[in-house]
Image (cartoon, rainbow, N blue to C red):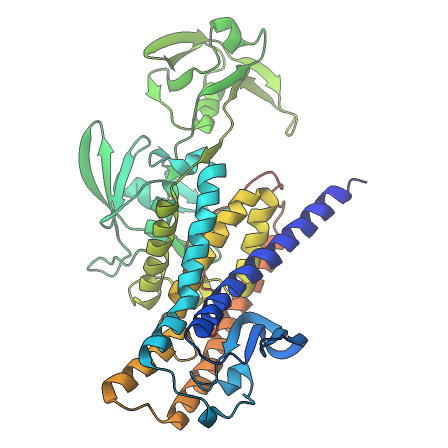
Length: 489
């Protein structure tokens, strides 16, 4: 029966993927649909997905409602707005018998889809604000926990650590990167990853502004391209919460007088910011007591603790331990709806900026298509539905911004065509619009296939990993905003 729990978890997570991803597309199309009905435009078809219909039904309002085979978006067929036959299928309506749509109505209908995605994102953000968003406590800090001299690669080799070479130190508090303020460690990681800085010798460059010993200073770091995806890495790791949760009775920490709630500040006069730093120090000093500087309420106290050798269950080796358990590293945040949505807007535009910049290392292969988005949503849902909600907010903001880009086939492209026609005082030739839409549809589908290839490649690589992360552990945050699948008008 042990197989039932993971099976049910996967089924539940899969259901949430279909519900939230499909729901985001539905919300977008609903915006177009309601705006079109409100402005008196004829609605011929409301489809979730492209291509041939899986299911179709004509309502009493004369609209054909359908689910289609290609789950890469959806559309509302509006004969008076634009001819998108290659994407939406041919219209059976004689457009000449219908009154033309005025420019204002076109704009309202075209913008309505993105507007509904933003409204949906705000609604979900209100829920997250109330129920909270779980995250790692170390990702909720801007303090550096450790800077190793080298970075160990997957193949066992090492390379110099850019952060160590630049002079960053454990305990430094990062306030900004390349002029962008950071609020947590995810901002630090993404600030480096999305960086566009280059030195005069073409080395990648990131400008860290930090606080050290009460003073602000600027440090230039030269990130390396590392990992299977070849992304910019600075080599810094976050500080951890070293607050004690509980103590083992009759073990050194309890016998020395440590109490739950005490926070470890330093060991033998050396500030510590990660649990591994304490373990490494004790391993080097097993024969004598170590002095622990603790924060207890508003005062600091020093306790001498003699570690006890114990057998590690995994390795079978003797390791020094003091019988101290730290506070759970999962914290629940309650960011305001405005903070959530505005942060996702900034993240999306920064990703687009990096994608378009020749000096960055972000290309289409680094982004996520429908497979990558569905997989990421599945991972978040497996851990906690609140993380799934957080991710759906990001997806909806992406959908809104992406669909308003001035690219033919997308809403923004149709806004561009309509605006050009308005300026010219006559519509662009229908043949020109049709040819442009068809060409860009092929380009967009090709891009999605290209990005999806790398999604599958990453999936296969992660599946071959030595040990998958347990379901109780949250997946690593996405380093940048994903590129959503296209959604028609």
